[in-house]
Structure formats: structure tokens, C-alpha cells
Image 1 (cartoon, rainbow, N blue to C red):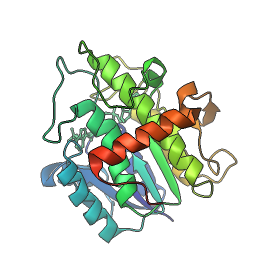
Image 2: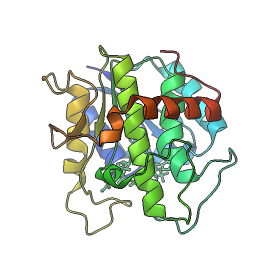
Image 3: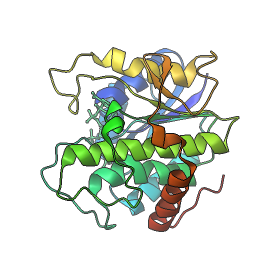
Image 4: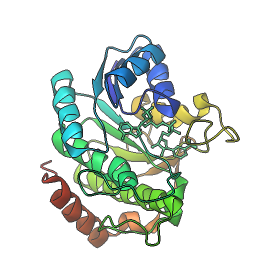
Length: 255
Ligand SMILES: NC(=O)c1ccc[n+]([C@@H]2O[C@H](COP(=O)([O-])OP(=O)(O)OC[C@H]3O[C@@H](n4cnc5c(N)ncnc54)[C@H](OP(=O)(O)O)[C@@H]3O)[C@@H](O)[C@H]2O)c1
């Protein structure tokens, strides 16, 4: 049995990951953006041990969430599932001066990773959209605005983050999971896969004991390693991203 934190568990792939983990007998802590969403997550994943709250589009709120999570930890596994999709017809700048899609999908996972003890396994929900991403390590939004480009950029950047963490912790696997095109709010009603399939690989990476799940620094889809975007292996790009993330959050990766 593992103690597992699942972010963004009030709906979509996150709630299904939490459900499957509870059903497999793990101690699950879910996450919602506020108390009401955390309640929804707890109701959705009945049997979860508790919930943390925090908005991932606010550094202050993400910090409070990390404080709360530290008190409920340490976690064996953290699944960074929460994400914000591309359907935004203009850039939205947060109180922290960051574009919201980039903050939720890249800056928040970085800040949580910097503030929480390093789990035995880390899984970050990426996307094949990353293959269309630009390695905009300065976190500048696309100009002119294009929500799909911002999302693709964010998923590429969070893949760089995962691969950097993996390189630093060869004994604590960090991996990116692409769930496929899944029927959720983000994926839409015409998506190919039901929730159960969308959650499957993340749950497997969190819990199974196999050569793939024991290794880090992989882009995993349908329980198999696939070629990662080339930029994920670019050490200079990764270093530049870490510098930028440290500057915007005021936290460096101590571990
Ligand atoms: N669905 C797909 O086809 C697909 C494909 C590739 C990758 N992915 C990735 O898979 C992950 C889950 O996607 P999904 O399809 O399940 O999306 P979803 O149905 O839109 O759910 C996203 C989750 O993230 C949470 N979230 C979003 N913004 C937040 C914020 N500012 N603060 C706190 N929580 C926030 C949402 O909370 P609320 O419920 O309160 O809004 C929700 O729980 C994402 O990382 C996504 O990029 C999905």
C-alpha cells in the first residue's frame, strides 16, 4: 500500500485515477482548487483518506497547498494530474504576472516539487501536444495569442521539468504519462477513450513493479515507453527552464 497525492481530482482523469487507486487499496489524498472542489473530489473517490486545497494559478495558494500536503505526507507517489486546457481565446495574466495556462501546467508542478519532499515516484500528466510545443523557457505566452500553442508549449516545458527531476533522482523515478485522447471536460465528448483507459497508465506507473515503472525519465503511453520530444534531453534548455522557474517562484529545487 502506498500513500499517494493526486492533483486535480474533482473531475476527469484525476478523479478516475484516485478511484482506481482507492479500489486497489492505496491511501489516497485528493486535491481540489478550493474546499468545495475538494469535497467533490472526496465524493468522487469515495474511500480517499483526505484532501488538500489550492489554486494552481496562484503561487500563494499553491504554497499553502504544499504546506497542507507536507502535513499529510510524506507521499510515496505524487501524481501531477491537474491541468488547464487550450480553450482560452486570450492570454490571462495571473496575479503573479504569469500566463495562466503556463502557470497551472508548468509553474505549479515545479513549485510543488520544490516544496514537497521527493516522493519515491512522480508522475506528471503530459500530452502528445508537447510535440507541437516551442521550448519557450522564458515562459512567454505565444504572440499573437494561440491557446493551443500555449498548451503545447506548457506540456513540452513540463516534460523538460520531469526529465530534469528524473536526471537528478535516478533512484526515485519521475515520468511523463500521455493519457491519450480522453472524454473529459478538456478532451471533449468526441474523444476516443473513456475515463478508465485515460487513468490506466498513470495508475500503473504509480503502483506496478515492472522494468518500465521502476525507471525514470520516460514518456509513457499505453503502458509503454515512447520517444520523448527531443528537447527533453537538451541539458542547456532544461537548465534555462530551471533558472526561470526558480526566478518566478523564488524556490530552487533543493533536492
Ligand atoms: N483529456 C485528454 O484528452 C487529455 C489528453 C492529454 C493530456 N491530458 C492531461 O491530463 C490531465 C487531466 O486532464 P482532464 O482531461 O482530466 O482535464 P479536466 O477534466 O479539465 O480536469 C482538470 C483538473 O485540473 C484541475 N484544475 C485546473 N485548473 C486548476 C487550478 N487553477 N487550480 C487547481 N486545480 C485546477 C481541475 O479542477 P476543477 O475541476 O475545479 O476545474 C480538474 O480537476 C491534464 O494535465 C491534461 O493536460 C488530457
